[in-house]
Image (spheres, one colour):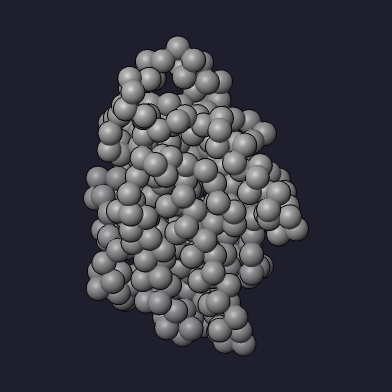
Length: 338
């Protein structure tokens, strides 16, 4: 069902969103469409794109274009941007949102996990930004580039080191591009969300004692107060784009962590060390707990079998599980339209 919204200066513009088929990207596509944008939704999975486009069209009454693209492939990203520009008669707004989340203690991963995160999160953002900037600079409305970082890029988060490193690079890229495009026909907005209820725990990858890692991550990412409603986050991001803001940090907890880290980084590091002690230990090979190996996607973990883990997950995951079904994260079947 179509939903009306206030008049926006994004009305009539062409927008491209990477990682747009589910979660936060899906919600950004929907809100752009509600604002009257001609939306191109990009992602790697054709089935997810089909379901995501149908979800947006049902909620907004708008028609959404889709394109399959792996943002790690520079040539493919260039072709995607050219296609969106040609198909939509120009390109005015680009949101680089595609990424991966890996959750595991450092002792349970190798350099390959860092390479994967840098290739997808940072490399994909670089490919998208550099391909889009010349097109955005030609926009009659003045181009807008939005890079989705994370509070994990503002301070290192235990058991999320590859993700934190890649998001830190995204934050630096955003600041640098904003400085180098000053006075030009394009603005750059970098967004650093905290925990959001998007259902991303089912798409994230878990290592070490994977089921226990899955339990704490899904619980915190879905806990009220600690995490943010994804619809509200998407709206805040688009308002920042409308106002051409330089930087947006979402959730009070993320803002507090960012400010505290800037004032007292050593103290924050010590506190992070204390928090890390509360997280699951890596398998020690001495028979204490299941020695799970490799990275496992949240979809494949299912309900934890450990009693304590099950209680922890149940405490905060209900809202996140609902978000997964609603925002095209849950497999199999289409997302719900609630």
